[in-house]
Length: 278
Image 1 (cartoon, rainbow, N blue to C red):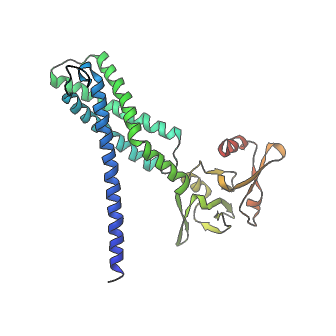
Image 2: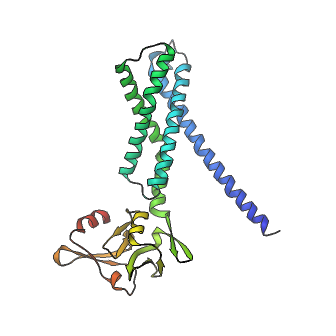
Image 3: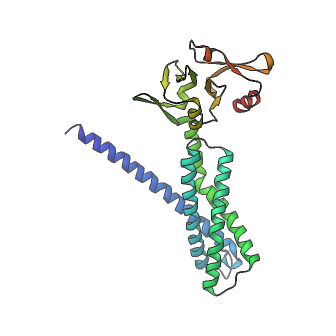
C-alpha cells in the first residue's frame, strides 16, 4: 500500500502539470488572437480609432475577425502538428520553418476563397476579383504575423530540444539504451556491426545501420564523414589538412580503433564538412 500511493501521486502530479501547461498555452494563444483582432479592427476605419468623436466599438468586425482567426488557428495548429511529427522532431532549420509558413498560408488561401464567395452569396452581394484578391493578400499578411506570434515560442523550444535535449534509443538485441545527443561522440561501422561511442569512451553495439541512423538523427549536430563513421560536432578535437585536399579529423574521445583514430574526409566532402562544422 505504501509503494502504490507515491506512484499514484506521481502520475497525478505529472498529469496535472501536463493539463495546466497545455491549458496555459491555449490561454496564451486565445489572448494573442483577441488582442490581434482588437488592434486590427481599431485600425481598420477612422470611426474605429479610440480618439475619434464618432467612435463606436467595431463589434461586427471584431466578431468576424475572431471567427477568421479561429479558422486560421485551426489550420495552423493542424499543420504545425504535422510538421512537428514529420520534420521538427528531427531538426529545426530555416528551410523547414519557411516550408511550414508557406504551406500554412497556402491552406489559408484554399480556405479563404470559397468561404469569401459563400459569404458574399449569402449576403446577396457580388464578389469582384479585384476586391477578393486585395482581401486575400491582406489576410495572408495578417495571417503571417499571427502564425508567427502564435508559434515562435513553440518552434524555439523545439529547436532547443533538437539541439540539446534530444534522445535516441539504441537497440541492441533485447536491450534498449536511451542516450542524449550531447553524450554521443560518434557512430561507426565495423564488420557489419554499428557501434555507438559515448563521450567517456563507452561503446554500445546497435541494431541500426549507418544509413538508418543518418535518417533518424539531427544533421545539424551529426555528419557522415565517410562510409564507416558519423561524428558529433562537439566531439571534434582537431582538423588537419592532409594530402590530395583531404582532411583528417581527431576526436576528443580516446578509443583504440582504426576507424576512429584516423577519420578522413575526402576532398569531395571537404566543403560540405567545413560548412557544417562552421
